[in-house]
Length: 358
Image (tube, rainbow, N blue to C red; front, side, top):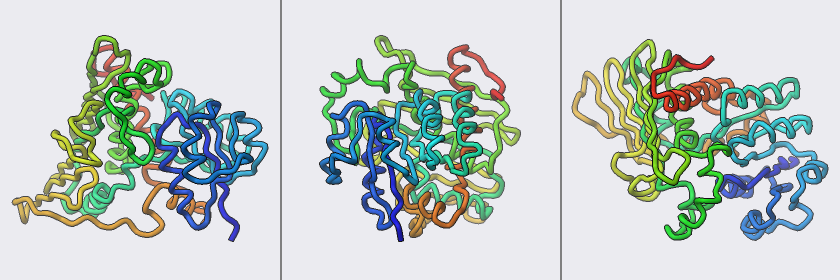
C-alpha cells in the first residue's frame, strides 16, 4: 500500500510536534514535507523525525510544488487559518486543522467555502476528542443512562500555552515570561487568549453531546489583566431550549491536567433528567449517578478502539475507506461551536447577553 503523504504547514501551534509524531508512528503514513517561514521552529521536528533537507521548506509555494500530498496538517496561528486554507484548497489536499477552528465565524465560513468543490475534506481536530473518559461519557449519554441531557458543564485549561512544547516538554516560568510579549498566543490580532484557545473545546464537544443542538443565547465575561491584551479566564453561560450550560476556560490553572489534575477539576460534568456524569480529563473512570443508584458509582472508561486512538489514525482511516469524517471533527458541527465562541467574544466585549450569532 502506498503511504499517505503528509505535509505539516506552520509551527505556530506546538501541537504540530505531537501530530507529526502520530504520523511518524503510523505504518501507512509518512512526513513528506514540513513548512514554516522560520527554520528555527522546525529544528526540533527535523531532528526528532530524521527529515532530510529536501523535505524542509521555508517558502509555501515551493513546499506545495514538491507535492502532491494527501493531507495537510495546519498548525498556524488561529487568525491565519482562513488564509492558509484558501491557499491549500487549490492543491487538492485534505486539510487537517488543529484546534481552534478559526478566529471568527466569517473566517470559518471562508474555510468551508474554500474546500467546497475540491472533492477533499477539511476536518478540525480537538485533542479532547481522543480522551477516553469523554468518549465513554458520549456512549453513556447516547445510551440514555442519565435520561435526556439537559446541562453540560465544562471547565478546562492549563497553566498557559507557553509552559509546554510538543510532547508536553516543560518550559521554565522565567522563559514563559520572556516569551509572552512576542508570542501570538498573547496578541488579539493573532487570535490569542484563553477563550479562543479553549472555549472551542467545550462548545464543540458540547454540541456533539447535544447532538448538534445550538443554544439560543450566550452570556460571557472575561478577566482584564493589566499588561495583558487578551483574556486568561472566561466564563460563558449558554441558554438552550432545554436549560443552561456553563463553559469556563482558564490559563493559569494551578497544575496542568495531563500531569496533575488541578482544582477545580478540568473536564466535563453532565446533568440529565435521570442522572449525572463527571468526566475529568484523562481520567481512568467516570463518576455516575442514576435514579436507580443515586450514590456515586465509578465506571471504568472504555479503551479507544484501534483506528480511533488519535486524530491522525482516525482521519487517515476515514480517507482510506472513502468515508466522511464526522462527529466533533466535522466542519459543519464545528461551525455551530464557532458561533458560540463568536457570541461569547461579543458578549464579553459588550458586557451583555446576546442572541447566538447567525
